[in-house]
Image 1: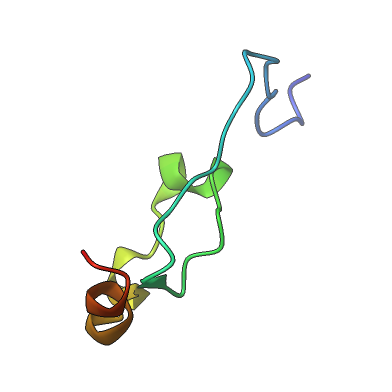
Image 2 (image 1 turned 45 degrees about the vertical axis):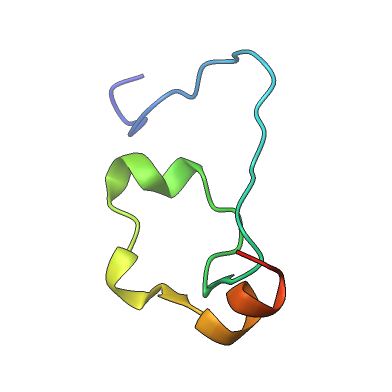
Length: 53
């Protein structure tokens, strides 16, 4: 176990949800704890408006 970087524990059901106008995000979850690159995400304002939000 000394050579194992981390041990993922089982948990409850996970749901990955995001808005369709949030671009460059593909439902990654595990990487969030280690620093998801939020600076690469962008919002498609036209699509958001087209969908009524």
